Amino acid sequence: MRARYGVPLGITATAAAAVAYAAGIEVRSFRLRRVTVPVLPRGMRPLRVLQVSDIHMVGGQRKKQRWLRSLAALRPDFVVNTGDNLSDPDAVPEVLDALGPLLEYPGTYVFGSNDYYGPKLRNPARYLIEKAQGRHGLNGNAPVVGAVHNPWEEIRDGFDAAGWVGLSNGRGSLKIDGHEIGLTGLDDPHIKRDRYAHVAGGPESGADFSIGLVHAPYLRSLDAFTADGYPLILAGHTHGGQLRVPFHGALVTNCDIDTDRARGLSTHTSEGHTAYLHVSAGCGTNRYTPIRFACPPEATLLTLVARET
Image (cartoon, rainbow, N blue to C red; front, side, top):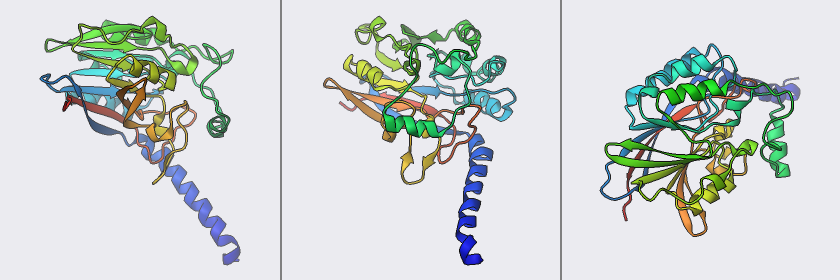
């Protein structure tokens, strides 16, 4: 009896323990990732940039809210929010409250699909199936008929009132200690709202340094930013794969970027130009799949320093 049932029972028990850990512990084990990126012009002082992404706030997530508020103690030079703030249409006040201390700092933002539309219950295996079929994203400018409209306008108004710069297919800038930081952003490619033609042409000539922002790191967006000469691109969306295999990494990215670049700092090359790319693993999950494994929720403090050459 032991030989016949011991192995299956052991596998089942191990799987159950992994799910319990992923859903009960790791998903609430918030981390700060620190990254140094050599992208600034020589002679420019280092800049501390806090990237927050994929909050996917659901009402009652008190620990996440306290952690987000605590990030203000890092005293960044400016904050970048790369979208998907909501996973609950009633959670806008909690998003704005949690980000309240960070709204005291200069900041900029782009939106993701979950800012616009509420999540739907779907089989997680579909991500693997879609990857095998070479399909990514949604067909058209909005999800299927009947999707819940999220009150993204209230988040936009809260961010704008704090002076954060909205970059949905737009340009802007921040003044940091007398330096002009050029900002160019796209609306979410995952639901085909990106319009690079509206912002094409490369960094502003008067900016001391420029950054490209996009929620989902689809290759068409990365190619366009890189070919136009942006030295740094910031994105989110992938959740770092959300469920990672130890010593292997992410299985899916939910877009067409390769799994090796599902989170963290890497580079991207297009038309003879190379840019640094940072993809945040984010600090939340879709409310219907509240688990993370080998991929803790995170924010990132990027220290931008001068290039060596």
